[in-house]
Length: 193
Ligand SMILES: [Zn+2]
Ligand SMILES: [Zn+2]
Image 1 (cartoon, rainbow, N blue to C red):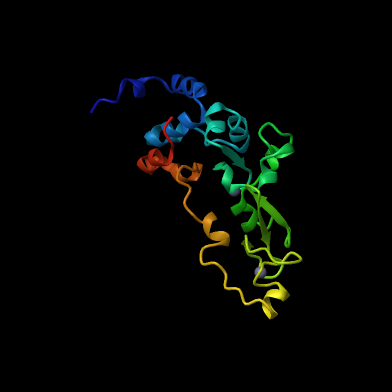
Image 2: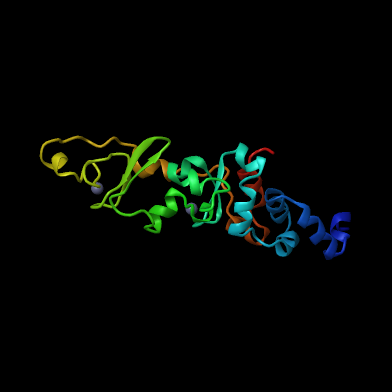
């Protein structure tokens, strides 16, 4: 089986070609073959930050997370992570982290209230849940004293963290295509360009 004309080029030319590619095209090429995956360096946090101002990323509402070092959709971030200093091109864009990372790494202070698309959430001081069931004084509703004694409100069945555990249908993780595997999955993960 003859290798394709592209693969017959010297590696220096491959590097030249790779240099000309956008981050998303590099990812596709890396996932297309084991060979390219071995010569393409995974994007760094800086690469993602540089790419998040591209029309490709802005039109898809993608932002960089410093924790999981990938693009995530705007709904995976609290509002203050996408605005002002932490907005695209902001001086603090490199400090932005997604909700999952904020919860997992305990980067949100306990008891803090944050907003997502204008809706308030709390990181409960007591049970440490990230939830839209906001109670009083940094507590979630079920942990709030008033709720424990007086109100016996049943929590809604599908609230809080659940929506953030949902799959990232297009999220790009450099780890997921290590070794040139999962190429089909990767194609599936990327939106149409
Ligand atoms: Zn993250
Ligand atoms: Zn709680």
